[in-house]
Length: 331
Ligand code: 5GP
Ligand code: MN
Image (cartoon, rainbow, N blue to C red; front, side, top):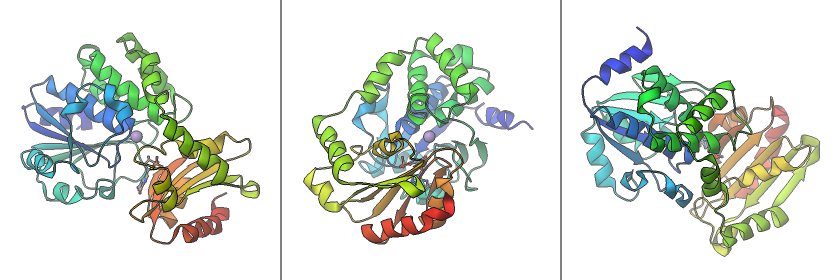
């Protein structure tokens, strides 16, 4: 049977549906989750969005955001939703370590699980998959899902369109990368629905605080190392930087991309020692260089060919040394 017919059949009876996305949710994670919720609610389902951790305030303009349940803030509420769910939609992640510590609850739940995602190598924990690594974003896939359900013309309200457009804009860096012909077609359809693309871009990109600008200034002036022979740049932030500049969640969003604005740079790494001690890596690349392979092989992570993340249990200095050591194998 056509996979969409499977899920259509499942969605025929009104259900309790939990929609869950990854930790440190970004525009695509939040946008796709709320868009799917608003869509499914139209068919008399009871839907709840669960975010494992808090969301950046730049997305406060999104409709219905105040209704989401944040596991870190209210574990009981999130557990209650999962306990009563007949279906769980997993959006914008494909491995359970991305929703830690919610993974346990998902594993234990007997609900029907559906994954909509665009990352490489999905783990086999779901019953139904819409997994496409060629897609710009999970929001693009949610649009296509609604379309396959036969509802694109009728069911996409301005609120849903705003959510979907947000994820497409954030995951493509305003249509700079990860695009495909569908992205522009869907963006055009959303614009026809009345999406205020200018306003959304303004909300997302012109919302910096002075403090965030100072962090960027510090990182670029004092913490950037260029390795021209490998066309690579590394920005590193220490635990002391986090304290001194009061760096919080979201304050370093997009920092890694500045490296690729330097002519000739093809690999960018942002390596940081988080306040609780963990070392996190954000990796970006251009063209055929796969930072996904690098993150997967050496830093227990993954993502996409040109945008991946990982972590390390070594010190900051040792992590950077290891990155430099393995780098030549991937260039
Ligand atoms: P970012 O650097 O913006 O945190 O993440 C870039 C991409 O890599 C995202 O698509 C994200 O899903 C993926 N990613 C980040 N960290 C991890 C990780 O620890 N494991 C896996 N599998 N993917 C990650
Ligand atoms: Mn995404």
